[in-house]
Length: 100
Image (cartoon, rainbow, N blue to C red; front, side):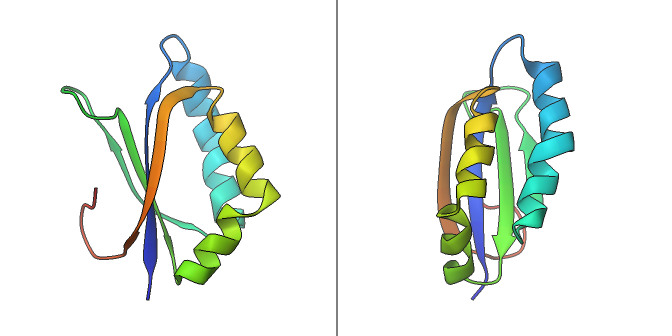
């Protein structure tokens, strides 16, 4: 059964340009190299929700667990944390459309 990794965070004030460069140049290619398929990215313009919601899809929970335990994933998330705060994630069964 396919699963999604749902991640949320807020971009650190004053780091927006560096953040977007990191996401395009390093984060997205990095998750793709690990076998994740980016499926959603949402930006909250207004309200009390996390600024960013990103979703990555994997064919199974076992394959996702393997990625989440890898040194490459841990390094990529550490680098993300240079640009964001309030990072959280959860794993859900994949379905079509918006999931939170």
